[in-house]
Image (tube, rainbow, N blue to C red; front, top):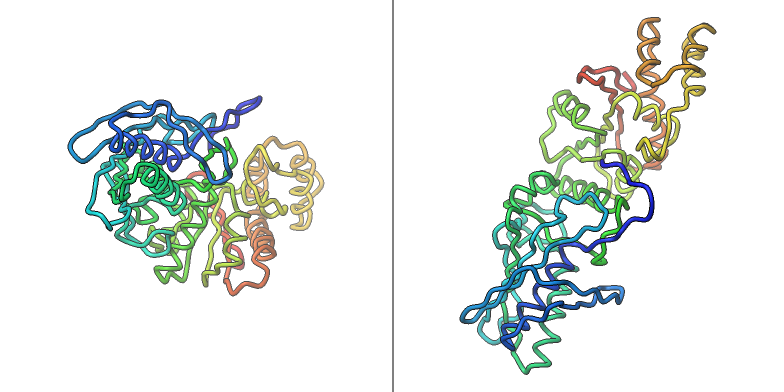
Length: 362
């Protein structure tokens, strides 16, 4: 995850808000022959942002407009992407139909807010775009029967840097947003993707999933248990976000995998494992070493250590099973969060080189 910059952060707009603005501009041009620029929309909480048009086109029975997505100061992979809405007339009575254009994905698995076979345009953006069509149709005496095709040039490549392929959204990006606003470094999008991963795994009938802190631990856990790609949840630093959701939406078996330092923080009771929001407590580690029989010299060296990895090396050299102790304690903290949900939970500690360090309960 990118580091948060210092000072006030500028908010941005979701792909759903951009698609709505593009739809309003395109449908207005279809009705009147003119593209509004800037184009103003109303978001779910009443905000009325205005967007500059970056692209426009028109032909017989259709009009299209494009908005460049501005994610503000959030490290969003879709920042700067062109979101295009092409609005085409349909026979009266057809209502509003959504289509995935180039760069927008199609849902292929159960468990997401949109059923398989549908464009990956989430419910709130669909509702906003329908509202725009209804408002303009009423104002101009139009039936409001249109197809809205959303496309994102280059979106298929951008999607490879998102969770879409793992969630079964193929061919491009999702058009997302619940408020229309991107709050920089809010982590909400990441946690929402974790939740969708759980939903997809449950809908597929999986009985074992894994949440890992990074790609190295994920690869080790996948190999250890032979898990399919769909069972791997991109937990990152958000152990709490995953575990709290699993408490309400359980899967029979859950493995938490991570590097030693991240798992030390979980064992200490931290649920956000990011270095900016939780720290390794070396006095706590020294106490655990003492419980494993470490002498005062080793405990003192732990107190003055620079990194958790350094402490692990000291423990391994002394033949003390610190990684196993940390895995057991981390599993205990994770079980407190799931609060008796019907989940068999274990923790796997993985070295930086992918080597298995320890497994809880083994």
